[in-house]
Image 1 (cartoon, rainbow, N blue to C red):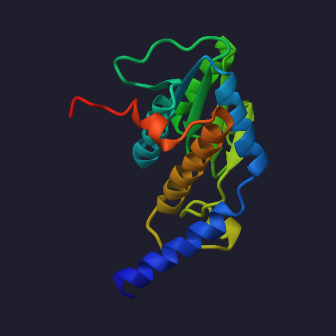
Image 2 (cartoon, helix red, strand yellow; image 1 turned 90 degrees about the vertical axis):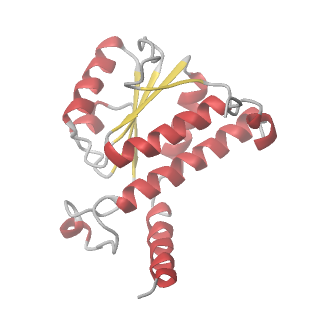
Length: 186
């Protein structure tokens, strides 16, 4: 296959995967963001990059949004929201954070392949992204042509961009109003 053919195959995988995500759960995430004072986002590895992109867009919309682990990230409090992106829902450091969030009585949202994971069982909102990885291809019968967790990571980015569009609609924002909060020290 050539690069264009691979690209088209990836787009088909994304269409198939994204069409199976629950709009109801995505709407719950958008509503929870609107009701939260502060929004925290975290993920490990490449998933963490997708989560950082989402936190940046929340900031562009005027939300008080933070990426866990950055030096300027404040403490989480009751009524705040932590969004975890984790394909497995079992990453050790993220499981520990989820326990802390529940103890503090903050809200917990998870985007994952495995809703019944350790984090999924604690979460107030769980969005399942049915993207196969080497860990689940036997269970789903579907194998991605992409390496490792790429399909999950891409689906996560697109899903969270769609949540941003929902939030823009609910708040009456457009790209021009968001651009006023774009970095200007470049």
